[in-house]
Length: 303
Ligand SMILES: C[S@@+](CC[C@H](N)C(=O)[O-])C[C@H]1O[C@@H](n2cnc3c(N)ncnc32)[C@H](O)[C@@H]1O
Image (cartoon, rainbow, N blue to C red):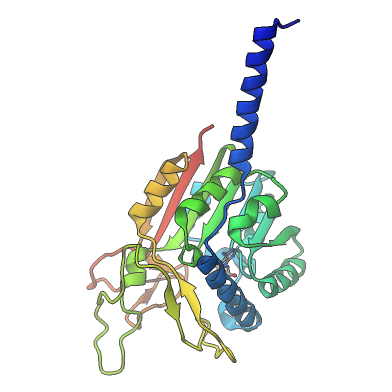
C-alpha cells in the first residue's frame, strides 16, 4: 500500500500523538519532596522493625491464617496467573499465592523486610521474586511487567501519601481484564481509640480522623505492633484514607469497582473484650454495635 503526501502527514501526526500519549502514560509517578522524605523515614522504620517482626510469635502463624475466608472466593483460581503483592513486608501472605500456583512477585520499600521474606519463602519451598522499591516506582522496578492480580493491604494504604498517584501506578501494573484486590483495616477502625487506657472503659470511642485531608500523622511510639521495643526508633508517618476517597480515586483511574465488602473480623484482638472466631480471628462481643473492622475491595481494569 502506498500513501499520498497528505495521507503521510496525517499518518505521521497520528503516530506522533500516539507516541506522546504513550510517553505521557509512562511518565514516572513522582511524589513531592516532603512526601519522599517521609517515605524515607518509613523505610528506615520498617527496616528497624523487620528483624523483630520476623522473630516474633505474631508472624509465626501459617500463611493461610492471614486471609479472611471470603478472600479466596474473590481472588478465584490463581494457578498460572501473574500476581504482584504490593507492600508485602515479610511475605507471609505472598507465600500463600505462590503455593496456589500464581507466578508471584512481592514488592516492598524495606530491604530488611525482603531479606526476611526471601528466607521465609526458601523455608516454605516456594518461588517468589522479591523486588525492593517505593510502590510509586513499581512500574519501573518491575520492568514494565503487567499482572492479572495486584494484591495489597492489611496495613498498606496508611503509608500512601497520595492515593491518586498510587491508583495510577496500580492501573498501569494491571493487564486489561486484570484486577486489584485490596484487603485493608477499615478507616473506622483507625479512627477509634486503640485500647482502653487504665481506668477507662472498653467502649468504642472516636479519637482520630476518619476522613483524609489533614496530611501526614507522625507516630512517635517506640513499640511495634508485635509488642517489641524498637531500639532507636524514629518518627514514622501515616495518612488517613476514607472509603469514599478510595472508591472515587480507583474509578477515576479507570477501574471498575466489582465489590466492596465490609466485615467485622480482625486477625488480632484490638480490644480486650473481643471474642475469638472458630477460625482464630477476633470480633467484638454480641452486645457491642456491629461495625466494620476490615474491608475488601475488588476493581477491574476493563480495557
Ligand atoms: C504492615 S506492613 C504490610 C502488611 C502485611 N500484610 C503484613 O502484615 O505483614 C506495611 C509494609 O508497607 C511497606 N511500605 C510502606 N511504605 C511503602 C512504600 N511507599 N512503598 C513500598 N512499600 C512500603 C513497609 O516497608 C512494610 O513492609
